[in-house]
Image 1: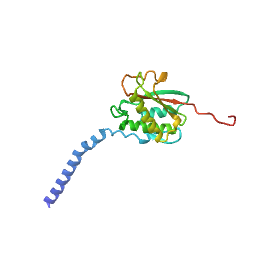
Image 2: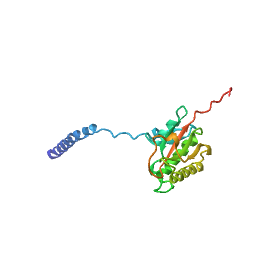
Image 3: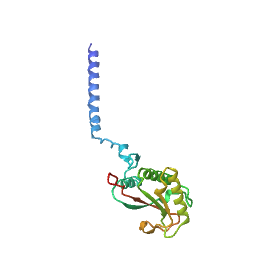
Image 4: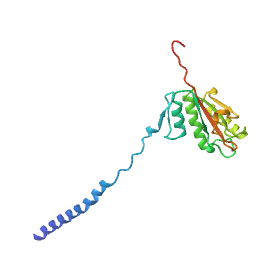
Length: 187
């Protein structure tokens, strides 16, 4: 019987030794910082003027435009369409340009009082830039943007100061935010 008791005693000691050895390993788990939580997709949702929503990450051009359009006042802002907006030396939208144009269409449809002017960002009239502007204007029209909201200009005039560059085909746009018309019993 001594061998049975000795075996049980040995098993108990081994079990206790294993538990004792696991203790420091398990307590080390408490020292590990939790992985940061992923940002909620709701943080990227922007509610537009007509109540529709779009996904636009913080710092993205479309979010900047959406937040600016939601503001008050009647002023304008100019933006470059981006060198990556078209396939090289063509008026064909690239994937990045297509995405940008889709976002512009969504923003303009949601804000019918906003106006978009597309223009060459060079110092002179630029046939490639004008062709690209016509491509974007046509695309926006096909996406349901009102005809009166989009205009193509051959020269930016004084509205694009600071946005001018010296390369062929460069395209910029200016958004004009009009104060909404006030309607009421006295109008």
